Image 1 (spheres, rainbow, N blue to C red):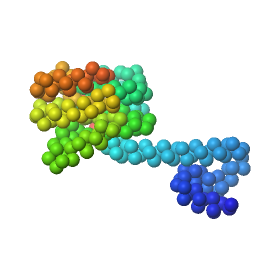
Image 2: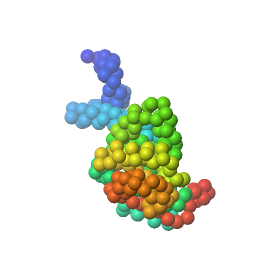
Image 3: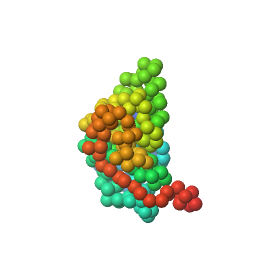
Image 4: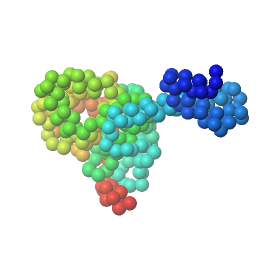
Length: 244
């Protein structure tokens, strides 16, 4: 079988990484310096890397993160109560494997959304499916879904995500529809999937934001008791990055 036929068959099998590596070896003559085992290993690794990168691209595109962020880029120089050891522990994503939650709280401008995006991207790198949304926008979207009959379909999609990130929770008190939507979201995920919530308000203020005592108890019980917490404090970082 000649090289042209081999390349054609590789392309038909959609082995794009393998194909590119094979072309490179043929064009550069690198295969002459490798043993047979090394050639096979190089080609297989190239295909594995290509599939990994394409999957990561799909996962991050579907997640729709607010920021392009990674744990490697997190700034520890600013005084905001950020514990590097905790960040490194969370970056392992063992808490996602354990179906636990993460709560990020602190005043505006301290990088909560950036941190949530970074942890979400880390999850994507490890193959987890992530869904990132602003709380208010998601509640509005699901209210519309209730009206047009697509609510359960949308909720089913969210339930299947390994990690749900709800950004900017508690900017204003929840109405009854929002309370029930949040309860449905957390009920579907409790003990099955992980959730990150970012909020400017400390957790002890969430009860008032949610409102209805019975529903608030149910929501906080499903969310807080199995959650890791990062409580940030300090001056806003926005002026610092704006000047850089």
